[in-house]
Image (cartoon, rainbow, N blue to C red; front, side, top):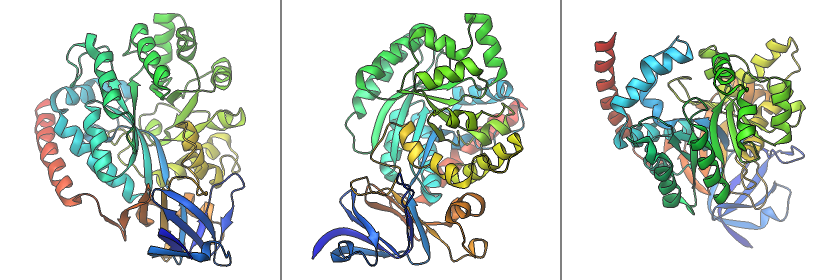
Length: 443
């Protein structure tokens, strides 16, 4: 008899492996932080395990933890602060001033804690973040038990954590050195955009990430105005500008990528740039629709992100998947475009590829034990014919009952086990009260 730390029995496993194997009445054996065996009730090898803890997943779907490839966790403190505005007005009239007034270590810590709780409760186990005071954000993720790719925000203007822009790269480098080697946290740099970072800053930041072999994060080609400004200032479109700087490569994670022409799509493909699609945020700000079906057809790696709560208002990747699938069908006038299984792929194995991780994104022997369970005993999930369609078109984050990250049960029966959810909400409400008073004075 073999022993393991945790054994999950029953339920239907969506492995999201290269063959998209689905296992009925499945079993998953976990030792430490890794999956050591996946099989079904008739598999003699997995049935030989004796576990310290057994979770009965009967009448559940079991799948890899979802991967949010682009968000700004601390901005949950600004949820609903400024809606129904253009990106420029939203940023310049509300978000940038609010950040200047309220972004502190405390705000970033508790705002990120709140976002991590929301993500865990809706099935996300890994997220890619970019903000200020990112060490506080990383600590929040670690306290909750989430896996995070954490990008220290870099801009060439005074920011809440770096008052003198001359120090931006040095400050970001200290953050990387502080967190390198952590089991859950991968530190990196997040250069906000080509219009807030100089060419010199972009090149210096990219050199640091190249040296450490870590991702480089940036907003790119999000709006038509960004493209017009790039042509005016640099006489090149945004992607061509970054190509000229030597920025485009397999480590670059570009979020949004809405306004690109054929030549830029060819650049994305040739340089193996990773793209993050943020449909709800882009729709809400009327930024446009990224040509994701074209990206996928050209072999470009695409993941899915929610963006921050200030521009999306929620961090539920189930909603994001459903929106992405529906949006591209109506844009193409073709119901077969971006089918449900592909949509789920964007938040699992493709998400892992965007982050250049080969140890998460699917449920396979040897991979990290990041997985979630969906309770199927609910009216809106009965009957079940196609599990992929169910997850994308019928389920929501509220249907997640159990979240396991790195072999540790972080949420059981919808209860977060690692932090005090009520206390976190109380702290964020205190911050929001000050923000509300400030906003009232401005209106």
